[in-house]
Amino acid sequence: MLTRKQQELLLFIHERMKESGIPPSFDEMKDALDLASKSGIHRLITALEERGFIRRLPNRARALEVIKLPEAYAAASQQPRRGFSPTIVEGSRGKQPVAPTPPQRVAAPQSDVMSSSVSVPVMGRIAAGVPISAIQNNTHDITVPAEMIGSGAHYALEVKGDSMIEAGIFDGDTVIIRDTSSANPGEIIVALVDDEEATLKRFRRKGASIALEAANPAYETRIFGPDRVKIQGKLVGLIRRYN
Amino acid sequence: MLTRKQQELLLFIHERMKESGIPPSFDEMKDALDLASKSGIHRLITALEERGFIRRLPNRARALEVIKLPEAYAAASQQPRRGFSPTIVEGSRGKQPVAPTPPQRVAAPQSDVMSSSVSVPVMGRIAAGVPISAIQNNTHDITVPAEMIGSGAHYALEVKGDSMIEAGIFDGDTVIIRDTSSANPGEIIVALVDDEEATLKRFRRKGASIALEAANPAYETRIFGPDRVKIQGKLVGLIRRYN
DNA sequence: ATGCCATGCTGACGCGCAAACAACAGGAAC
DNA sequence: GTTCCTGTTGTTTGCGCGTCAGCATGGCAT
Image (cartoon, rainbow over all chains, first blue to last red; front, side, top):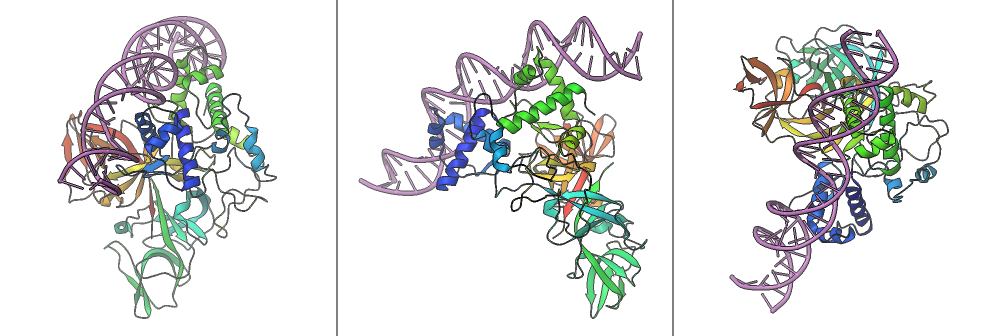
């Protein structure tokens, strides 16, 4: 992704920030890379920004920030130049005894916003309108962005029906649910009614009772006594495929 | 999925990135595969990109990145893919089974090879209503289920505005786009109008002209001559977070 | 205010390499 | 035989990187 020069600059900036906490100015970078003009730096910076390695505020002195480092950062920082020796990094990491580790290396940046993912089980379908059946069992798994998942257990359901269309939840969508037994009014939840029907509805309180409200004028809000409804989770994410 | 040569190239690139962090140039690849010409490399690279194994910036030196590896290789390198018990609704935080490892190991950044998810770059925001600006730069990456991605290059955009609400696309959603320059009528596309405004709209034909149709009665369908609109990709997925 | 300095932004020029593309040919597979 | 993958040669276009020079702006001291 990066050319030699771009990487050189990026690592220099990164070093500088680690040591002094202050990003270097264009002039300092120019000197560090042994250039005679800041113009070259400007272009390198632009390239780095374009590739998503740094972020900056335009027209602000030293206003730049490293947001990710090249993958083989550790290895590259050794500047092998010729005849690379890929063993250096491996040594620092050790061999994983059992863990089947794909060819990946130690993540370079710590505070980096890295996009990892989590796998959650799809537990069946849920009726958004007329309930089909309660939650079944794990049919398969789906991978979701880790940012979508907070703490706690999660599962996924396929939405059947159209009662939540006005909330942007369509037939066929997959919803990600956090397993919880409580919710705040206004949140969309998986509600189990009378221990038999599970539905995806918006949660409201009506005095001591609970209102389950669809997001579709064709469906009525249903109100139950507090003992007839169990909250089985709340909506935290939605995934849809087209085609 | 891949021909022998394509796989050979892919693995070479992957090795190179692991070792030096800098992707090889066409010339270096040519030498590595023992070819006399870069043209062959060009075709192989194109094929790999089409199949979604690598991502690259056009016309940029060494601007390429491996985003997934062939299954054969992934399987071989993480041999005991056996007892992979995918986190029942229990520890949902699980990722890959990690054995006795030093305190919390994190997943490697992009180009990490997970059989079930793919990382795509978020290229900025797109106006669903009034266009904000054309597609900007890579802001960060997001992980999406592999099932959502077919072949070809993909990217993601954050949706701004409400012009597609009736299609279930809300302000703040993240849409996954397959990079393509053609689409079928009725599909939702990223359209670049007059080389300046990028919008997410439904694609229609009106004779020789192109109609860009919002999914919100408050917005009018706009019709352009065929030369004023460029298709920049089509919608293949949507991800939404609640809270 | 004036002027200087630090810092950042940009255009122009040049060299060399990288990438894109075109045209053509051999070989393996269906 | 047709098709696909592969390999070759060659041309064209564009980027990477170095250099110089000019300009804008905000802070600071006179």
